Image 1: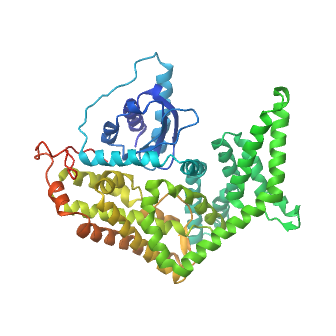
Image 2: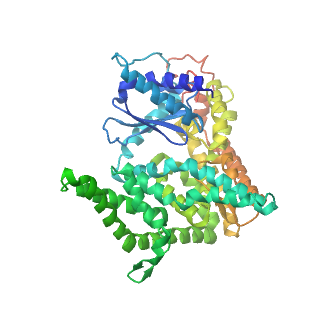
Image 3: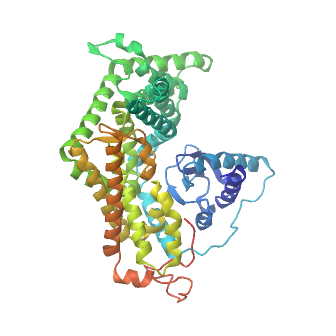
Length: 511
């Protein structure tokens, strides 16, 4: 996407979310532009979905620190979101600095199709259920790790390339350089986690990073922590998260009583000192035990019951995503990558996306006369193959109901396939988090050869596609659903069509 197209996309989105004055904050993750809004009612959902560059929208009830309604997420896809976000930020700033104008109102009237309406209604119903303190905490923890994903991906791919060069004996002079490039970030990931933790929870980011840096400092090996031997890196990202969180509370406590004239000297000193001592003489040991337990449990889970564990994990991941509980897995993935170099869970969880793709293809062939829905599926499938599932989930399977269940069955079958090989001793995982589907191939690593690892993962995807397709084709529709959905929405003008519970879209809205 050229710079002009990036700016055009940002310019098209801005009025549809209420204009510059309705934006409280702007951020982005791997695939989504994330904005917090002052007034949710100003957002034109259907017009946003109709933009060619928009793959979908996701609502998030978590209220931002600055107040307002909450987080609204616009799915643009990997790469595109990183280019559109700066243009969007620039337009918001330009709009705020210009002469005050009336808040943007509707610029287009687009008929809402029944399927999109049903998906939106489901998200509205889920929104209230996701506003629990536990889920909001998980969301904040996810915000700590999501900014690290690009570095994890880049270093993971470089590590894989380096391993390939080592196995082939090529370019021996380059191998040490690539190893340093790939490992540098991971050796200091605790510092970045500490920095982001303090930033997320309202502390001074650099103080969170300073306390977390203690964990990776080689000199900790000389500290006698009540007779317990400390090792550099002990506790990893969990220790860094806990240490930085403690630093936030210590800093806030200091600011309640330290005089303003002494704040710049006393507060940072006490924050680092108190948090650092607690980290050295407690948190590092406790977090180290927790990290070791996570690694041991993951190994035992897949080694002892890999097929069943894969079936459960692959089958339940889509519902976990819908409930927002998948965010709890991010620190676990990162801990496993830090310990073993890869997370064994991600390739299994990626099978849920394969089941989703298979289900969408079955819907495509099961409804040959519904041109609108078929066009939506065709536009969303390329992103689905690359592991971006939101367009297919919110635009196809979830509002249809039964295909969402059969997609989970496909994910369970693919997960069981991959888990079975773990049970047979062929363990492998992903060296980074974030990508899924075909995009995960460059990040795979394991105990066996690269060819075996790639073949097993590809086999799992094929099983997920096939089972998701078959389950949806034969069990994804009732007779009533087929009668209502397998029609041409352009020629079906009966008054009760739009109100039918299984009515097809009346107008195609690109995913």
